[in-house]
Image (cartoon, rainbow, N blue to C red; front, side, top):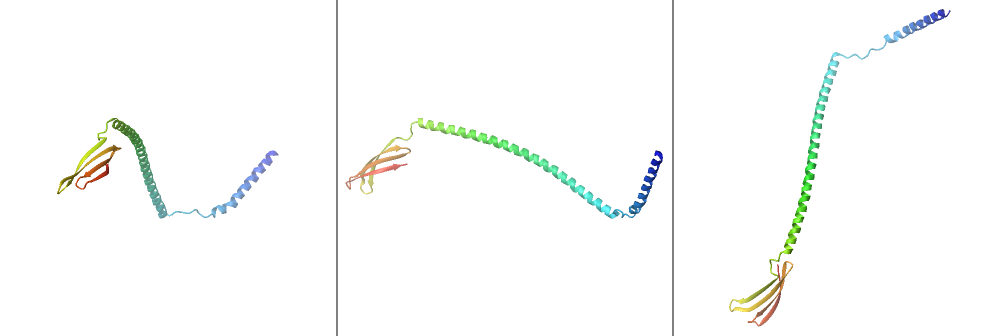
Length: 170
């Protein structure tokens, strides 16, 4: 009896399956066809695809060239930074050396005796075109820093007048 029930069950299942196929068959046959491409449309699509591939390969080439230029620029930048650091180091060394030389020169100048005399004395004669010598002067100037300050006295025996002058020489 069990075999009989299994047989009926199989027959019922197959009957349902056949009915379902018959029921859905008109729906499958009446479905609209998928879009069909004509030969000219296919050629146009191929041309567009080829153009896009050419543009893509050109862009890839340009990208690779740009990457190479970027690497070269980065290398040049690194070299320039190293050169800048070397130049700054040399500049600081030269500045230190220059400072040392200036200090040494100042010490040497301080230790040397002054080439200009500390005191200047002057004697002068007052000359008149008609009467030749009409007076005389005498002055003393002292070196203060790099300038001379002094005092000069004069006497004019024709006019019988005396005078005093303060002098500054640079």
